[in-house]
Image 1: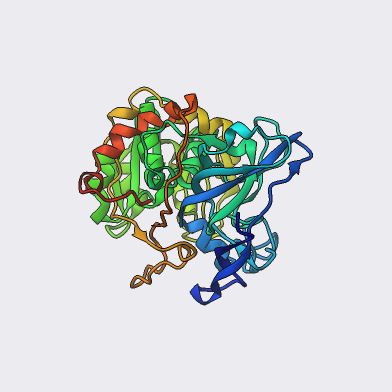
Image 2 (image 1 turned 60 degrees about the vertical axis):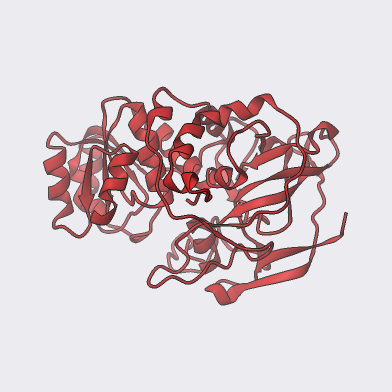
Length: 393
């Protein structure tokens, strides 16, 4: 194997001028993982996808405790240069000490979270592409325990690479909110990757979903399972929510944050839950604490589903197969090493999915691939799948 590879590297916080494509980047070497007693493995990346986490990390938009405007990555300062990319599908091409050689040649999907420890409920303390090098390269090293064998999955690598960050966050939000059938949930930012995943996953649970987005996305969100939509550009948002849910909300799945939190908090019923995993509308907010403690409201932060929860969710829940799929334009494709340089779009620079395919590798069948198979009907119904294109988040 070559000792050098092509990689897309972020050399500082900034816009696209902070990105360099390097052809002399060293191929990482898998090593043992002391705390787990298990080792790492080397994955040849077949597809890596771009999402808002990569963009926010590159721009240093996460702030620091007490310094919300400080330039920082997902969990704090970043060591540069850094290979970004948390959504990774690929093929195992080498294993380190303590890892079965039988994994070589397996097609895998990577869990990008870096966990505190091996406990099933351990919180994430880092993310590939922020605290460690990610998949915008020809190869990436990851712990063997965080690679899921999808050899037998009917999904393409492009489809698989759309799942970990967006759907992982959505699954984690719904699990932490303990959303149940019949409950009323408001989803903010519903036309984004995580937001649309929330709508798609909450509706099959039997929840009554109201989605917040632009009016142009209303039909798409109803196809995804929402029973009502709130338009950001059609008057008072709290009034729109009240008209759709006059008896109040049981939960809010929020990826926007911003000043509307204070307006919407009174709409949540007693013992309700507000789970948040984003701040695209503003990270610093104010709200009346009395509305929280007097009504016994839970405010929950979540960044990702734990690996075990993600695997369980991939097995499917009743009704998942019957939900219409998300409709999005085909992804842009880039050669190896250029995946993190998305085309500039007017007023929405970077806000799209970007994938890059590499040659396929022979793989063996595996029993774990069926855990994701229930997504197949939904993807097959997508208009771009029928047109022969790929999937974008």
